[in-house]
Image (cartoon, rainbow, N blue to C red; front, side, top):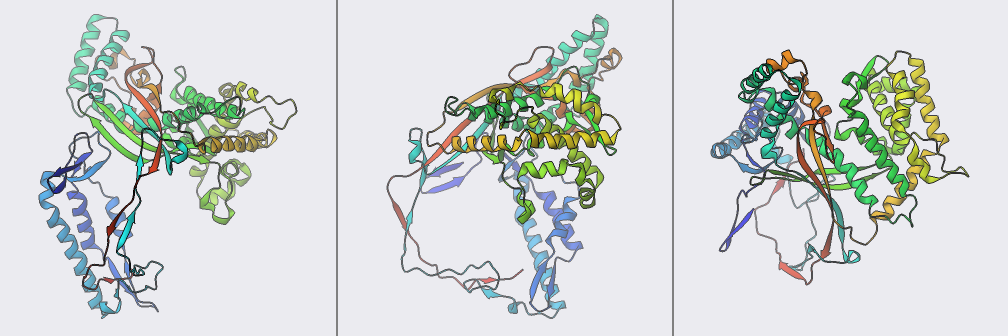
Length: 565
């Protein structure tokens, strides 16, 4: 936050901004590794160049346990440059120690090789042999024009210079989550334990072993909800964004909107399937070539949808704030769409995303893939793509058929088809049957012209996003909750205060399978929940009226040298 004070501006930490940091341990470990490894060497094989072995230092530091620099609040995921008071006083000394160690190693290397560093230096303003040069053409003009952009609450879309879509995710009443968990546990105990003495014993054990113990599973689950549930929120935001775009389309003018509706319907079907209350964790486990994967675990993650040719992408977080007065935690992300383009990592041989993943799914390519990677990685990747591509693209409708009705795309029961035709085979041990399923799926994609449907959806979305009109902001109201399935049912366990499944203490990411987002829950679905809403906005930037300029001239400074590394 910038605060004006007469003629002076200062930076101060404002209310609700990210937290202060202490990088002391991280910098100390960097210094320790610097003292144990040679950072520099001079290559003298034709072109003199200073080699800096930064990667080895970084790898050694990354492999060590380092305390979280954000000390004050375990909820924080990001922070400002504001240092904690204790570290602020040490910061200059630590940086000076690092600087002296680097300078000492550099001088020692140059002395050892009897190399004069001046032979490596060139003035900053001279053209460099490298592709990066800081030389610039001098200008006789000292007046530099300024072109500013601004946002407006009222403006015509056609006048905007830039536009982007953003989503603001607000999780409400975070400061009440501990109390809601405790109340939810007591309700659960009362539902399961009908004997009053057993209930009282269980409540006392829960109070002593969980609520009064800061390191217990009770608080561990709270941290999971805060740190790991952002992935679930981002995944829900992707689907809500597609719904937001769908509502901007005139259905009479664009019948292909059915393809967007069907994509949304199938993404919702994935959520319904992996959250089915009657299925156990083991019901979601499949295998291929001896490697297993649990669909409930994987498809609880935000990145589980990224292999689709058309899917929203959330940018790196643009902002995170906490409102201490009402307990709202607010995340802001930019939005863009993956548009079925080519996979850039393949270079000149790049294929469209859909073709790329179909090649991975093809058992004929198994040996080649294993040679380039390993059995576990390839098998698990194929299982993930099998599930995702079946749920999104399996169909009995050919858009090129004469009797084709586009609305028939919405009739295919993807969950039933998967449970009947795919799941039993991949929970078994007959690898040839599995390969037959994979080959048949790829042939089905060709037979029913899935690529045509993808291209029509791509064209529809591109046309929608290129419209000049400004989309009306929209808010999607949801709730995020923890399924009761994470709680034990044995009266003996509950009576001892052993309430939570082992997954809470074993692996935080596995807890995601019990966290879900819906418009509402019944009392039997979850034992605690919080309100959450997703606000989508179409942000436009306009040229600021009027022109400004400032005078610019080269300052007289000593020569600055550059060192090729």
